[in-house]
Length: 325
Ligand code: PBG
Image 1 (cartoon, rainbow, N blue to C red):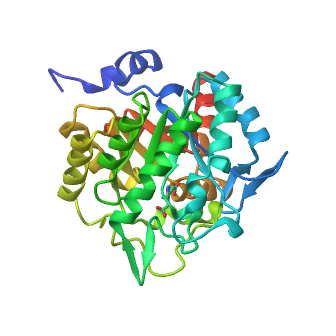
Image 2 (tube, helix red, strand yellow; image 1 turned 120 degrees about the vertical axis):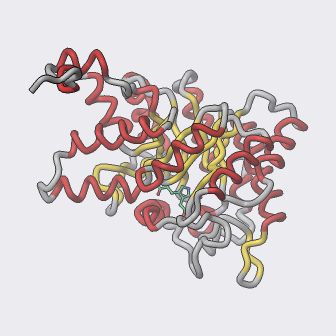
Image 3 (cartoon, rainbow, N blue to C red; image 1 turned 180 degrees about the vertical axis):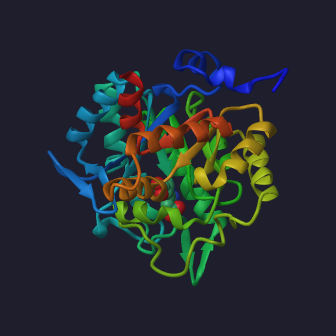
């Protein structure tokens, strides 16, 4: 053969491959989700998310310091609300002394440089497990948005660096931005779950927080996974309404959406590698059917290659340890 181009030359040794690699993961790409529960010295494994834990605030602080030492710059907080505190409006979500508010303060005190993001949605606080207020069989938009804006303010007051609304109500980014501005919280950012699909891959997360919807599903607010242009519409609107970072969720079944959004906006794009995506790798690895470490790095690299600047992932710590080796 007489070829003018031999593409294999650039793949011929680890050194050459490292020189021409286009996508390099680093620990600061990751956002580590944390599940916080009441109590002290608690570290409970989540059955459907093996190797992942619900932790009390004291245990969480140890974890946060370890994450920081590994080079992770950001945590995303979720709390498990006690059943007796749940209602339809999610009143506990704005309790200045609630578990979320105490967690934010404790983390910012213990590790002030760690960027603290907080989940904003009513489902952990809702007797119905829905992200909004329920009237009849409907999840009502506007009263929910009022509540989400107050919830965001309450997180900002407690010291959150970013609020992360994960609910998919209409108009919530504008309402949150307005409320923060009006109250002088001009340094609090908004990471919007802009293109969040109604996905079966959230199953294990709902176990973790005991937040599965009590009736129906989330398809009247989360997006239909058949749709692409709707993701762009949602995202561009969130950008107009004042989002600082936009997000696509889930990640691996939506790499096309991540790329399209990355090409459509001029701000950072994050992707949420969700609980079901974590559980699939864990389960296959446990059966001996996949090499877990390789699956982690390949998955996260593909999400970054698709266009994600940031990746929320339950593998944040494992990946950071692998990258630091
Ligand atoms: C709810 C929320 C969910 C997740 C993050 N926030 C679940 C849902 O929408 O039902 C899922 C995260 C995951 O699966 O890892 N506001």
